[in-house]
Length: 453
Image (tube, rainbow, N blue to C red; front, side, top):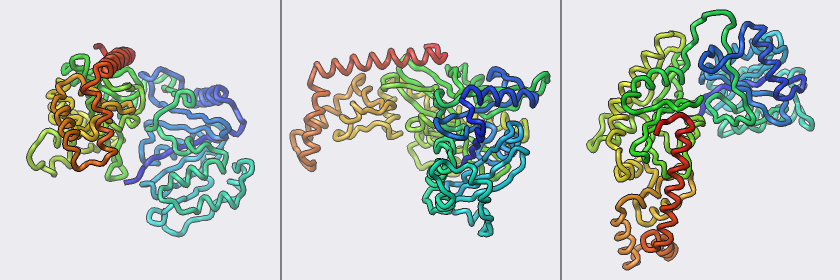
């Protein structure tokens, strides 16, 4: 399955710098009846992403989700509010993209289609309005280049968008930016607003619902809510093992629905670094297992695939206020029954190793485990072998070295090199020192995001 997302960009027609643009945006929001506030009071929140030498500023919001209707309506409103152009791009399954342009009266003035759009929009599509789009062409770009890029054939439409962006004076990252992406605070700013002088009930966002429902219910089980914009719950076991739960949006089956899945992961403080102050998708290398995954990890017999399929994601109606908290509570029950019950059993490094092997995050094979011990990836926990009884690995390696059967000279030499993990006291002590350094660093990181150790 390809990507589904929506992104919007505001034309910075006055060439304002970052602070000037933020001030203008906040002033326009104020004139529309909104005032800047803290995130916990927010009714509406935005992320503005800036890029050097770009004539456009990307704007994203959690409320946009994967459907385009909310973002499109907002694009027209923002264009009118700021007196400029605003472009909304909807990517559908990485097959095609629809780019709607709104002018300073808030009305759509043109739409561009890119990619394999016939199945979605038919083959009777209008040509782009040359008079409108030529005003956005960057220095050195031509109308012929614009139309050729727009009509190109791409395996993933995102590749075409990345090529189109600089032609119209836009940063490629901005054109592909959404609220789900990792946010570089040097390029982006979070802005929170509430309706001035009203008691309007705040619309419950997905992340807020997760923190509210899961945070309260799982606190007695030892889970703590991370002090971050991003949704994480963490439980620390013996100052060594981390049970982490988060959430991500999913593509709903029907357009009027929205959907999410609960993610879980098990890590240790002995990896190179732990960062829970970023979008969960930045940790997807290891925080990728949903409720279904933990259900399958916990059984040795043939799984009930029907049960597994209904636990993968949870659908709700975003326009029905009670729908999200009710579905979130349903997700909580599945999470407690399958994910947390499994995590409860991972309370030692030995059991942690067994889980990480199941999750294919570390290896036990003699030819590979040495490389895992010294992996350069930040999410690798392979060095925890040093904290456990790994004698059987040493015996396997010795057997291979002695027999030297069914392996190449390169593999043999690799094993000989990493055999020092078992025999070189100075090397082993160096690893032990590194493990302790990582532990103290990561525990400090956790404390800084509000986790009581």
